[in-house]
Structure formats: C-alpha cells, structure tokens
Image 1: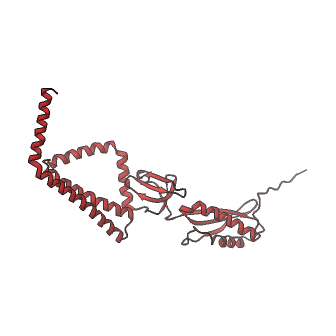
Image 2: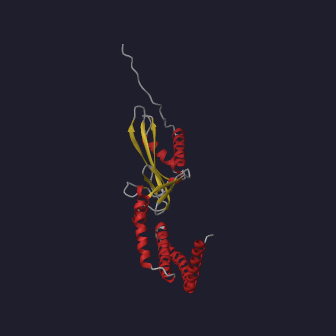
Image 3: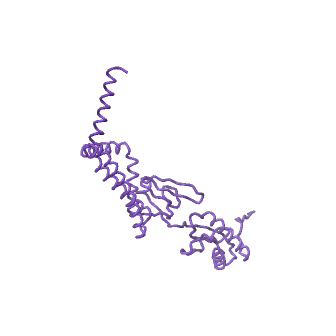
Length: 273
C-alpha cells in the first residue's frame, strides 16, 4: 500500500472515529427511536385492522388502512431520526422527490397499476369472494393488491390481472355464483309443461346450485325436430363445471324415466317423379 493510499485510509478512519464520538449518543437515540417506531407501527397496524374488521369493512380495504398506518408511523420515525444523525431533512426530501420523479417516469406502467389498485380499493366494484369477468377471463376474487388482482377458478389456477387492465373496462360481477345455461330438446308430441316440471324437480337435488336465486326454465324455441327447453340456473363458481355435468345427467335421467322423448335430428326427404 502506497503512502497516498495509507493517508486516505487514515483520513477515513479519523473521520469515522470523529463522527462516532460526536454522534454516539445521537446514534443510540436514533436506534431506540427506530425500534419504538417499528414496534408502534406494528401495534397500530394490528389495532386498525381489528377496528376495521369490527366495523365489518371489506378485508382488502382493512388491510390497506392497516398498511398505511404502519408506513406512516415508520416514516415519521425516520424523519425524527435523520436530524439526530446529522442529516438535514430538507435536502433529503428534495432528493427523494427528484428520485421519485425519475422513478415515476421509468415505471409508468407499474404506477398506473398502483393508481388503478387504489381506485379498486376505494370504489369497490368487487370484493374478495365475488365472481368477476374481465378481459376475457373469469374467476373468484381471492386477493386485491395495489398492483394486481388475484383470481382463482375451479381448476385451482391462479389468474393474476394487472389492475390497469381492470379499471376502465366492463366488469361482470355475479357475486359468489355464475350463471349456468343449459338446453334440451323434447319431442313435439311430449307435453312441454310436464317436461319443465320434471326438469325443475330433477335439479332440486343437485348440490352447488344457488339457493337464493330461482331456476328459470321455459321454451327457448321450436327446432326442426324438437321443442327446445332452456334452463338458466346459478351455480357456485368454484364448482361450476361439476354442477353443469351433474345437471345434464339428472335432466337426461329424469326425462327418460318419465317417458319424455329426446328426439334425434330428423330430415324428411320427398322424391318427386
């Protein structure tokens, strides 16, 4: 090590020793303040979350308020600590503002997701447990974060949608259920009213259908070979396909047992001489 490098190391060492001597008590006080700030932040966050749950606020909104309370207390502790370490707060805030501006320009997409997340949290077009359709995908809302919303479907797939693709779009919200539309054709000689009641009875025993929303059954149209009966019922989203398959099976079984024919497609061909 050369003489010049040795002098630089010595100067740095002396600077550190001088700083520790001058600010030793301030450093200890700053550490104590930060520990207290982190502790208070966690306690206040827990209290805010408990208060929101007591008031029966949405879980997403409750977590957001709790996180904001914790961050605010920790930020206040940092502002108190900085002057004790010999750091001027005003230039620091100005530097953070300039840094934030540059980061904002570089991360416009991410910031737009956060802005959309705040809009979702405060306007609450849907809450955890609702079934939504947006951007061609659908599922049950499991979590709402500032940057994205997490959906889940019957297959257990996790569907992550950036929030900027939700805000401003047309959202279909059907709460915990999803509409199930079925159709079956019966022969023209069969009684449609009897067939409708048979279908309604067969669906009553299926688990997974919504008990709060009535089943709608009626004549949908008149085909070439059959009277088309349409069925509209609400199924629990996380059992949608299971319920649909079971409903088709029960409808087929009930119609067959009661002598209601489901005709094959037919064509009548006449030979002209």
